[in-house]
Length: 467
Image 1: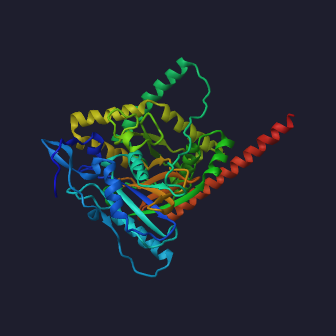
Image 2: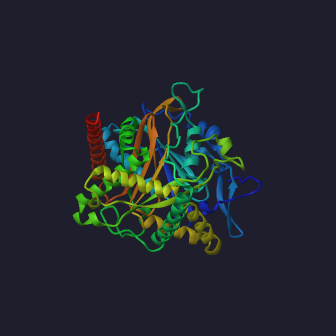
Image 3: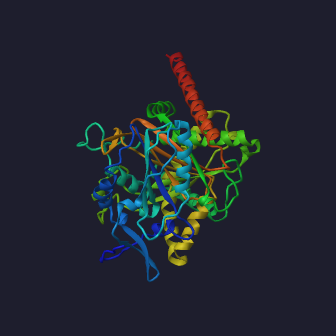
């Protein structure tokens, strides 16, 4: 393999954390195609569009004087493209099983360290969701979801007019009630201290109670996985949002938390009192919307390439705490709002840097692993385009992503696309029943939607009675 003679780029601390003897975390992005896949342009697209996006796609990690660095190498795209062969002429349902088994097999394999840390898998067989699929497997050391989503979008075009840019939903913040500055400052300070201390306790020794979504097993990083998805209309979520006075994330998180509790109760009644928490990943960049790749790689970019995120521990409310489903959603919304406004998320990043400085990358990796393992689930979300996308003029009907190589039993990823929201549930086989979990999530959404309708009608009746 030819190596470029140029200055070596140091691997970021987060890159070390995610590619160590303790952890090896990757992101899988799945594109669902409307028509059978024609892959004659795959190698050309990778060479001319994908590889130039960032030098890391043409680099390997090497160790130099005890420090890891990115080293440019010559890349042969054909070495990174896999096209599996399944039996012919099977039903879509049968190909569902082959697809699930294939995703599980690539998710549990570590990348070889002598080649750049990415792969593309072209699945030409139809299943219940698509006429074919393309899976991008990208190591988390290359960048976080924001960076990798930006890279993926650089390879795609608008299906209706490739000359126009993809657009994204507005991220304008909701109006907030004015508060006394002193009150707000004191509240934020107290929340920061409480959240940071609680987060440290959770990460070091505060493992969640065993439950149907949380086992006490070790070494689940390479355990087989199963994925199930739910697609929801954004208009439906917006309607619930407006009726309850919460955010879209508040509705979705409330649904996830309620669905998880319903699943736990159905599988084991005694788990209704289990102490359970979710780890929610947050982007720490100043700008939330995607910027061009050219802007991301600038040294002073406000939306830089790399791993720029942190996590917050969020307690999952118990069903026994409320008699009303809407109280459950409002409680979840308020918890998430308080956690997002706390400065503890930045102290968490500082703690990792301190562990890295005094204990080395392996110590920081162990802390990240412990944080993941001690939680009952991890939730991450991203915003996708409003318009339909295409890859080499082949329309994409849907897409989703997931994080793999982690020690927890349940990962939930959320992404919007073309007026819909897709939730992907990645579970460890033999621990969580994916179909029952999916049904409980759908039941939770229906319960919230029906309660919101009823609440809205009651409010309307009360208003009319006062006229």
